[in-house]
Image (tube, rainbow, N blue to C red; front, side):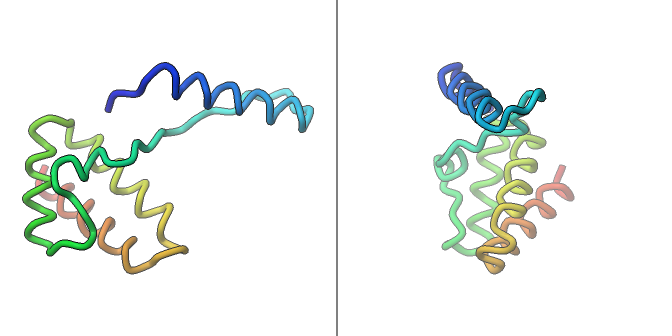
Length: 102
């Protein structure tokens, strides 16, 4: 997954300003950055059927590393599990399918 230097620098600046306000001495580590639409570019959506989602993930594997896709699906699952459990279950199922496919 490609990240622009501009987006990473913005996150670092926000992180440092939060630390100055809280007067902490540790640095804020950015674990991951989710880019909106990176999977929808290949036709992935939670509103389509399971077979169509799997086809779009197969397309995505051709240009993005499978581990990156798995991590993105897992991150989306974790972020949605309390807010929208039905959608989170779809992300988890697709991540497990991808894990078995690899």
